[in-house]
Amino acid sequence: MQPFDRRIAALESELRALRAYPREQLAGIILEVGFSCDCCGRCCTREYNDHVFVLEEDVDRLRGIGPDLLRPAPNPELCDQHGRCYVSGYALATTPAGDCVLLDGNRRCRRYADRPVICRIYPYMLHRETGADGRFDWRQVAGLGEHGGYHTTIPCDVADRLAEETIGYEIAFLEQTLGFYRAAETLFAAEGLRHVQKRRDELLRAHARGEPLEVLVYHRGGFEPEGGAAMRG
Ligand code: SF4
Ligand code: SF4
Image 1 (spheres, rainbow, N blue to C red):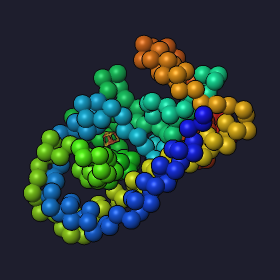
Image 2 (tube, rainbow, N blue to C red):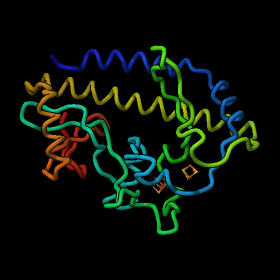
Image 3 (tube, rainbow, N blue to C red):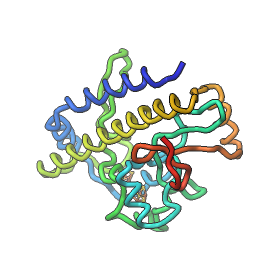
Image 4 (cartoon, protein in one colour):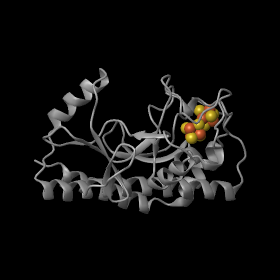
């Protein structure tokens, strides 16, 4: 069975919930938490983030800055019967140690003005997660209490802007993921492909041991090989 319908329905439901989330509520939480960044740089390393997923608008900007700043996001969602994997977007490339390639030796961002949207809003987020009681709840701050400072005074207009940017990022992320599944559904139907979960899992395990993996990356409505040449879909 293809995974598309159920996944698309779940993403659409999540998107509706996200759109209905009051911006003032998130701004209120931002004010209450009063987070301040101490510029430790840990969120730009593997210590905090396995990978930094970037939006399509970031991809276009980062490609203008230089080659080799991007790689396919890990854990491709789909794999066809021929062993080709499909992933919903790109992540920032990392050094062998797992640091973002744009992080300098003093733990500062080399392209701070051009950093992706996720780097601008971090640690704010708006994720719907299942609580201990099995009900949905929202998480608004990543690593709360584990980094930075708290209870600083944040101007209301700054909190409003952060809330707007955070919700905007989360909506764009879900829309991109939805676009990925819809494009994959169309491509798989047109080319007689089917998703094979077992094959995907085997290939990812082999890749973790160092074997190559063929990945097509979703970007701007179609799929491109790593590096972004010809599009399919
Ligand atoms: S782009 Fe800059 S801010 Fe973002 S993870 Fe890399 S070094 Fe950190
Ligand atoms: S957001 Fe947090 S982890 Fe990242 S540099 Fe600031 S304090 Fe450090």
